[in-house]
Image (cartoon, rainbow, N blue to C red; front, side, top):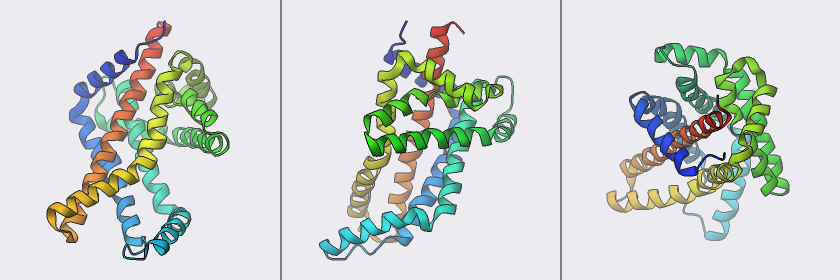
Length: 249
């Protein structure tokens, strides 16, 4: 029996309501702060915005091409923090029964390296697939997206076992997962730049520009990003729980 999409969204909402007192500080520490750091790093090293239109386009293109190479260490640390936050949330629901948040965080930290390797492999598969044919890359990412909660639920299975369970378990959820990963790639990726520009313009118009408007803009963008990552993590978990229910586990 294929799980219904509305049931997955409803379960994600129930998961949020059950643990929001813990999820809010977790999202603030592991999603909002790293994203705010990345935003500030971009703002500090971006080219001037008052260049002529023909020069600005070339300058921005060159900036984004070299940004990842120039700031590889802080970007890697920020992404590792975000991945750790995701893994803590997964462990909170899948391994945290009867445990304090501190014990859950320690347990997640001990098993973090395999999780980081898993996320790196899944991300590489997506990047390679998207760079070649786009849709196959999204399909492979969708079929492996549930490997992360599978690893959190059963770390003894290892990377291969988690990837296998994620692939087989997602068989009835391909449509839902394709929508989810498309949101990750396009909304969180490309859409973030558009949303960020709109927010900066709106806040600048309300507060007349300056440091206060810029700070509020960056904080609002990071807060929205943290909310998106939290929602996607809960949907990922709810989809995995739907797979377990379908399999009678």
